[in-house]
Length: 330
Image (cartoon, rainbow, N blue to C red; front, side, top):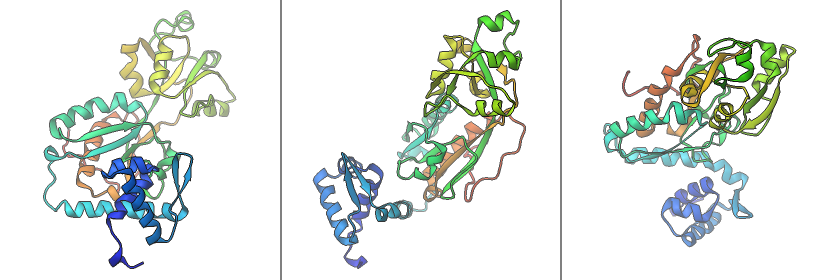
């Protein structure tokens, strides 16, 4: 292909199509009409000698060639935007960038209120969208899903993703205050629940896929134990609200359990069997590492998350280029 005759503006359209999978949504993203995006797609197909997308119902599915272009195009466009923005110092007070953050609703309680308070004071023009959790196995799709920062709970970060570990989280059992069986057994808030009693009670688990078997069940099976899971829910809020109004037990990250216990009338208890703590990360696309606004936001998130560590264990090293530096020590 002769680059001199290629309209580089078409790359922004291709980038939008790869993210949105729709000419209508891509048009809104780049500020063009839908017919203009369709015409641009026709020009791209001719210039690159590939169909690029095939229609599946209302969606456009990228060809293998188009899929291979996704990350290089995003990286080059991001680098060009940073270059044109100039080399002057970044001032969050003047920033009007928008970012999409993905994580479980754990962060709705433990991060977002404090983060928005900080942004209101330090970067009032910055806007965030908080979207559904990206499953750790889908971290390699962050670029396609138009997610700028993910907050996964995993120990397996794909090579193409940069990540910084934030904190370890222990686990606690929660129950409704005044739970009949616990009360009859003389078990109060903060007390241990014997494993025999724990296994004999009904449970609710967090599962984004609706699975009744959870990590706790895997651990119990290694001990020759089992329990009855009566309900699986797709959010932590559904989990602890269900526990508050029922006789079910649940396991929550310890920091979240302590944060919601008083408000929702819950008692908290140590897990009655050993469980490995959860490891929480801040993860992002490699091409966004040096973006000034993105780097600043990562630092602010790090300030608010690192104090949540409740396990006396060193954090693993960051993945390549994954150093997160907070903008202010606290």
